[in-house]
Image 1 (cartoon, helix red, strand yellow):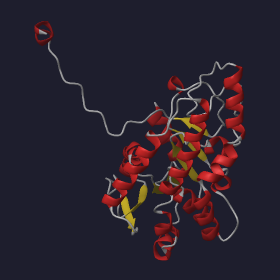
Image 2 (tube, one colour; image 1 turned 45 degrees about the horizontal axis):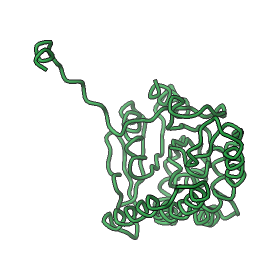
Image 3 (cartoon, one colour; image 1 turned 180 degrees about the vertical axis):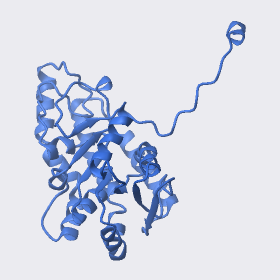
Length: 291
């Protein structure tokens, strides 16, 4: 059902009567693996899908029924893997035994993520030939995962409708950018490990975390905001750009989350698998009895 909603929504932007042109700028790792089969299906159905990826990545590369464009970056795949492993170890080694420790872990994780998510931004955004080529395509829309904000900036630069497909980000940028209500009395902040039934102390901690969301997002996107301002030649921020999103595809499911408000252009599409499932093996009644 989630896949049907996703495809219908994308067809709405690409045009239902004729094939459309879709620019795809994914994020690396599981972010791309969860998006890949939808992108390939759109290409199979006759849409012109152009996927832009860095030359060195963990998992991204050519995909079926799409055109892949690459851009150079100043690191190798081995260096990327080593850097990611070090950053993950840093986050996992942080003490979260108390509420104060959890808050300190949150601040440290913002700093770690900031360095990771902008590593390839300049390689694409300041590649004049490739950016000119993307302009010449005259895309109908861009589909991107805002975990790495390069796609957010490209969509604004090209002035095309932006469709964001994301997993929840630590600073709650989806809530801030969309102006979505976020009542701190019953919507627990991410990484607090609270539930929707908090005691008075937990509600106070959750309120403080909620009030600090804008500061956390500014901290997390400091470098990205600077790059966006240089590319667009005006003072701006990632949160401001994302506030103009046409659609949000939220890779989460109410079955696994506490109830919270959503804006009309937000669609829960569930936790998408990273690959197509294989058919179940056939088990005969004889085999079952032998077990």
